[in-house]
Length: 364
Ligand code: NAP
Ligand code: ZN
Ligand code: ZN
Image (cartoon, rainbow, N blue to C red; front, top):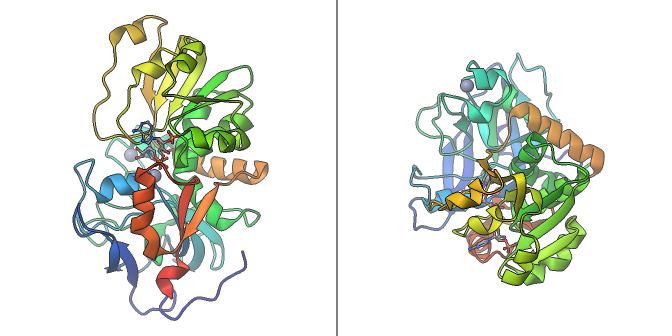
């Protein structure tokens, strides 16, 4: 991407950091234009002009208060990619004009044992989320990337390669790291049979990473029409999960399964596909509890685990891995005015495979 000329109202040139955004005012209202304030940059802050923001299903869950903790108005967006327009005097990692990205967290306590291990996402005091988190600087809640700019401490800003399409990099900041982290933690690699459940934003990145790591990859989908894409994205086999006979053929055969489904579904169907000591990791976050039949764990000493995004160090590692292996997200670029329609399509599992908002649409 070439350095883009900033409009007069961008954070770099504005006297105050009044910022245009899109917000939902209640759990039932559509997203609509809304003005927010960003803090004046502190010495270690980076001001990012947001060029692209991915649309995660977590945005939809939170806009509609499906996790029962949304504070309104909510400005979603945690797959943020853009260009640095200003840095505080003590910033060493970035300079004006650099590409930069921010994901699901903008800060954490930085001193607990998990933060010190680079696992800020598991901060014992809970990380400061990019939106709907506690804003320690201005009070109230944090506002996310469906906006023209954001101010983030350099410790939570990621470096992005100029080699990749910036719009297609944006989803790596959540969909990418959320799938990369468990695949690495459970050491997925050659000789292993790995399942990915659900071909959406997370699922398609899971396919790409599991394939790049050398595993034999099987996609489970409820959408038969996605089979050809799944193969192109890295699957070796595709199973339509509604077909009981097809499912049965894979009984007790998987080393690892990553479940990236956004809605209620039967987890037992997948636990029974794990072989001895196999692991099923849940990254999908449906609002309702998922009942587990005891014998699906007992027989085969199977493990059922969860995983949340990834730490800052690992997120940078993932971005560097993507630059090295030429991996980006498959995206549908939209204007912010199409965001409500995009949410409706997400609910129908109809996205190929991540919506990304071209933030120029907000600035025009
Ligand atoms: P998405 O793009 O909407 O994809 C979800 C996929 O799940 C759909 O494409 C569909 O795949 C499948 N699906 C949907 N409804 C289903 C149903 N009723 N039964 C079975 N499968 C169904 O969502 P996403 O952005 O990838 O996010 C997926 C989930 O991960 C969300 O719950 C999100 O909140 C969560 N998440 C968690 C983390 C974390 O840190 N753990 C981070 C980001 C997101 P098929 O058409 O192939 O069946
Ligand atoms: Zn997300
Ligand atoms: Zn901490």
